[in-house]
Amino acid sequence: MCSRICGYWCLVAQTCIKCLSVNHVEDIHTFVFAGNFELETIARRTNAFEQFLGNLCDLPEILQSQEFVSFFYLRELKDGFRAIRRADFSTALGPLQKAIWTESVFLSGKSIDMLLTVCGLALCMAMLDDIPAAYDYTVMALKLLEGETTCVLLLPLLVKAIRLSIILGKDKVEFESSLAELQSRQTALSEDIPTLHEAFMKELQNHKRFK
Picture 1 (cartoon, rainbow, N blue to C red):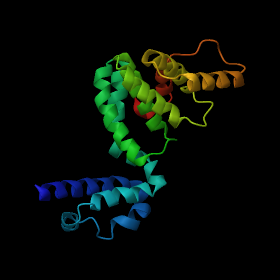
Picture 2: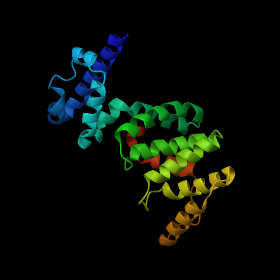
Picture 3: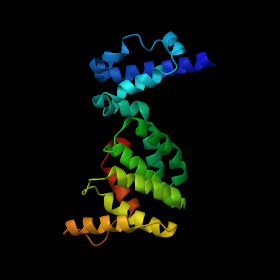
Picture 4: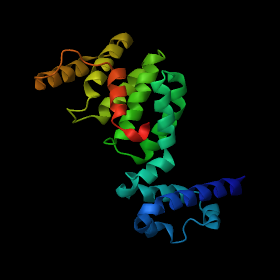
């Protein structure tokens, strides 16, 4: 069993290397071709694949590349977002939960991929009446937007957080304060704030790779 697991991770690493080497051969060469990820090495060192992923995390150019996204989580995002577009929120959960696990390992809070994934999960949970989970993901999305004032998802997220806080009996003062401050800054702000669903669907349209 151990040899099978080691062989699997070796295959994953080699496949990933091949994918990323298409446009990032110089970056990959710094740690890939030193012989550290051969099958016999992985069999002796169970943390070799973790080290491989750690090396990837030190290369922001790779983490932001289309090759990296396509290899690790783009398929899950597309599947999840397609399910949301057809209002199949229960089906969307699985792919998006897989994607957020991967994104949380590699990406920073400034990633639009991670933000859309978390917002998608917040939306799905709300639509499925899982209010505690919807609240948790909404708060997570707001944390990813700390310091931001122009993102179209920010106002809908604040409104959603306030409403979920009321339902759950949680303190909503911080969200109300942030909403009031944001509205006071945006003098041209429309009186009608879009719902999270409306804002999310509109934002998806701006990212062709998720179609």
